[in-house]
Image (cartoon, rainbow, N blue to C red; front, side, top):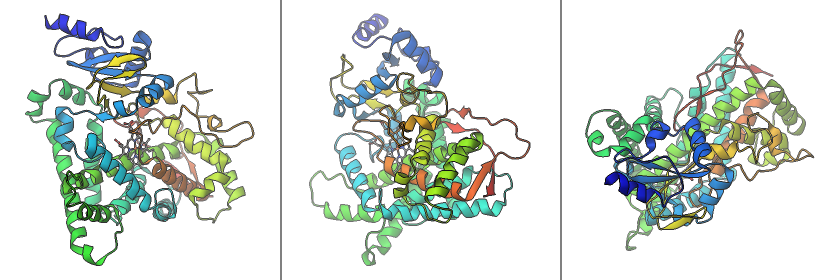
Amino acid sequence: LQFLRLQWRSRRFPPGPIPFPIIGSIWWINFRADHGSLKKLAKAYGNICTLWLGHKPIVVLYGFKAVKDGLTTNSEDVSGRLQTYLFNRFSSGKGILVSNGLIWKDQRRFGIATLRKLGMGNKGMERGIQAEARHLVEFFRSKDGRAVDPSFPIVHAVSNVICAVVFGHRFSLQDETFRQLMEAYNGIVAFGNSYFYYIYEVFPWPLGHLPGPIRKIESCCNFIRSFIRQEIKSHRDRRAVDEPKDFIDFYLDQMEKTKNVPNSTYDEENMLQSVFDLFLGGSETTATTLRWALLYMVAYPDIQEKVQKELDAVLGSSHQIDYEDRKKLPYTNAVIHEIIRFSSIILITIPRQAVKDTTVLGYQVPKGTIIMANIDSTLFDPEYWETPHQFNPGHFLDKDGNFVIREAFLAFSAGHRVCLGEVMAKMELFIIFCSLLQIFKFTPPEGDKEINLSFVFGSTMKPHPYKLCAVLR
Ligand code: HEM
């Protein structure tokens, strides 16, 4: 009877594999949304189709047109996040990344406004990024051209930018707390989009009460939360004397201003989770893209040389890089966008949920339906990119060599929940990438014949660990 009821329910949704009671149809993609399984699904059932996660429907969008239409036509209707056992257990519906309703609207609006006050898109943040770029340059200089794995120093530089914004200070490369924070965030990121994640979503209750990965994630979250709590406490202690300098300062002021406003969402738990989310969203993504950036420069030396020629001709070798310089460096800007496209670090958006009955590409979709938009499929859609599987900066240049943005460039997603750190990420990538290429030529270690450009699958697609040499130009 349950089987028949499910079949009858599923007929109202876009097509998809047959769902079974308890497990739904997630078996069809082997309990994990990866590149191959989502491609196979679109081939079998079309660019909009349905999977069942247990008894919960997921509408899957594939390719630029379906993703863009699905996320922007009734944008507000599909702007919810999942309210499942796992999501609630880890964030309690607070903060920005996985919150909903008024909490999400307030925290997101406040988050964007405060990042702007702290210099997102202008000189304020630029100085912090330039300082981190200088530290990174010094790190490579100290290696004197010897082979080195650049991952940790890159993660360190990028994370320090967001640390300065939210906490008002940076960490040294040797700092033990910083290393533990990074490990804790890595643990959380590794869990998202893993087999375990999907199995927990199907069987939340029994698995949620057993020891295993979920306990590990919980201890990672607790470590980060207790660190942020300490930061909030030290901000409170010194607050009376200082002007607001960072996100926590601004948030404490906002709590003060709204303490008598009924239903205000500005409280300590939302502050803590917003800080957690800005760090999570703003650190790993940009650092991973920068790791790809250097690897591509090693793999495509002719492109590296062309960037350096442009930098030399337009700015010279000693000019401090500003974000404004991108307007004079169309080729370099195109290379950075192609790095973001080609590395395609995010396969699917953080899952969305319909907040009311709505239509998605002409299908009636009831409230509560999960929407899974395949970002990667937009960045490689053969109808929108001339050579999707080739690293080709020409994708972002017109016939006269001017930089052009492309409509299918949805690396930061689209609609109401579009990434709020896009400008910050682009500033970091531009300033750090140019500062490094101005000074160093990146080459493979001697004797390395093959450069591995395949990715390690996870919540973000990372390069395999690699070494390179930074040779002074
Ligand atoms: C190359 C770097 C980055 C990429 C590729 C990226 C991509 C994304 C994507 C695909 C989403 C999901 C949007 C959706 O659900 O539709 C997202 C959300 C988000 N990103 Fe980024 N991001 C990057 C950098 C950053 C930075 C630097 C920050 C920090 C300021 C940040 C903060 C966030 C936050 C807070 C959200 C959640 C927004 C919401 O739920 O309303 N991201 N990002």
